[in-house]
Every structure is written in structure tokens, then in C-alpha cells.
Image (cartoon, rainbow, N blue to C red; front, top):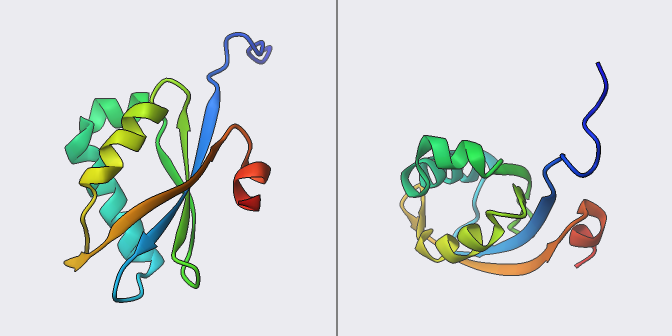
Length: 108
């Protein structure tokens, strides 16, 4: 079986976001909160179409790396404003960078 040519593959975008909270967040809390938020915001079908994935969460800096496709990046950025709580802890999300490669996203 041949792989898909580049013109047919979905183009991915990576977002680096920072959580601002009074308390430290754990990776487990963030992953659970993101999936609950994604399923309630986009629905299960929308979350599947968006190819949404939480790649990495740095507990020390409270930063996360998210992957999505290029068609859903604007919806994701717009809806991150509605992400308010992680395990009943109030949070604010700041988008640091959006890029097409993980390497450039991690640099910021």
C-alpha cells in the first residue's frame, strides 16, 4: 500500500499555550479537562474531524503543546477563551505561538 501523497495529507498546526493559575496543574488534570472541554465544545464528531491532540504538558512552566489540522486552528483558538477551569481551579490560557512544525513551536 502506497502512502498518501503530500497534496492529500492533512496539514497539521501546533499551538503552544500557557496556563495562568494560582495553583500548579498536573498533567493528568489537564489531559482530562482538555478532553472534556473538546467533547463539550466541538462534540465527539468535531473533535475527531479537528484531529485535536494534547501532545505535551510541561508541569514546571505550565505550558502545553496542542496539535490540530489547519482547517480547525481558528476554531480552536477562538474556543480556548471558553476554557475556564481545570479540576475546579480557575485558569486563563495564553496562546504563545502557532506554527506548522513542532520544532518552531517549542522554540518560543
